[in-house]
Length: 213
Image: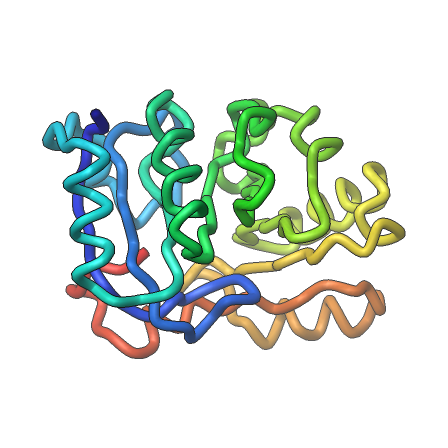
């Protein structure tokens, strides 16, 4: 049983899977309170839902990709069983985690999108650094960047943990409406770092009143 906020079909708005039709499973509760969070409605308790019911709704949506998000999905132990069952059914499964909890138990078939919190989030002290040593070839690291300080932090963390030399995909995502993406692009080009600009395309496609991921 999992506590669920919502399940919906959309296109993936971020990561290397951006633009692909995806079923999103948003689980309830979060142990972080990022300053720029756009899904505060996920902080509640949600509604209890069985794994079989969730999988049935995923099948009804007909999307080959499934994204487990939140909130913080890893707060609920049963999420591991859900991810494994979805992988067994040949879905391409990604997990969006805030990076404060260990990813050690995540099914090796899952694409983990590890969000490393920058100072601008107010949550940088919550980062669980051993997760960076657990990254698999398919995983990606995301930094949500509020300002120049956050950018420099992301660059330093990537250098310190050898993410550049390990060829780990590094996603730099400007906080929507706060940091002009052109500024972030200029910094990336100036420093010649192998990072990807990660725009939230769902916020471009739909209005701010539409719930996104």
